Image (cartoon, rainbow, N blue to C red; front, side, top):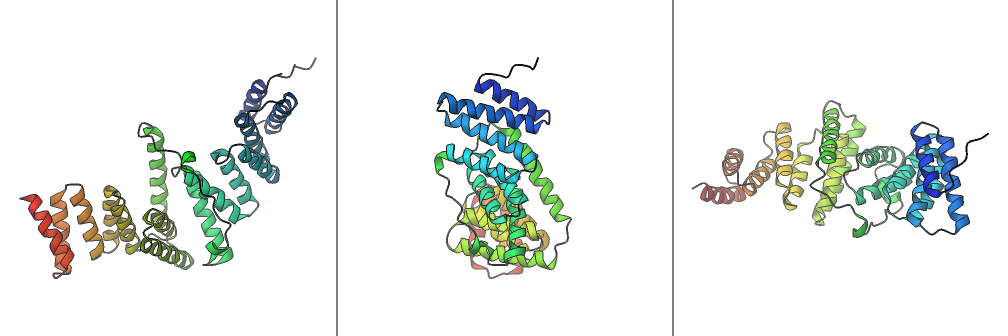
Length: 309
């Protein structure tokens, strides 16, 4: 006698989740389909539950390599609960597998608007950027569909208490940076990095420092040998009052170019804001040895000297 099937939406979803964890993706998809059918038959109106079921079934399709059905289910899930991270990520993965890089890029970027710490989305944006530059050339951004604007209500607010996730994300990002440092960029990578840096510079001119940081970070993912990219990103951090990040970027800039005047000046500004006046004074002195008549540095030296006395 065949085992009796679960007879509620919750039981069917739970059974589907168990099958998915056990690697039975086709079976899991069947359970999710039965749950969706049951909701339809009963006229149940629960958009969140229905969205989760579509998203879960999409995950089964993705595991089985059925990218087109994955995209359909993710789109259905998002029509019910817009800006849900899981269906966006799953749809992006399916688009990427089908080499629809522009659509994958849009979904990954949408996820980052919701939660900028999602590492898989950050990695996805970097992969899609490389693929799109290779296929469409330097003007690839002009050929993209528009990225939807995520309302503030859908954006995840950073919770300082969730330190474990933050630590894990920091570790992963550190590994990425370490890996990038050990790689020699190709001439194509250097050109891509240059284009992205210029895009960052244009955003700075427009006062959009947050977006500029993203551009400089993308540039550094291609080539991390440009001192000016680090010092430019440091400027953005200064404007946004992210002083510790500014210090780190200036230090990296100076490691690459020990005479980068802007890096000395911006690190001195950051140290001053952090009330580390001795370090600030030391950076100003180093700058003035290179450019003795640098007016802004002389003025900053007087301000820091007053704080030291």
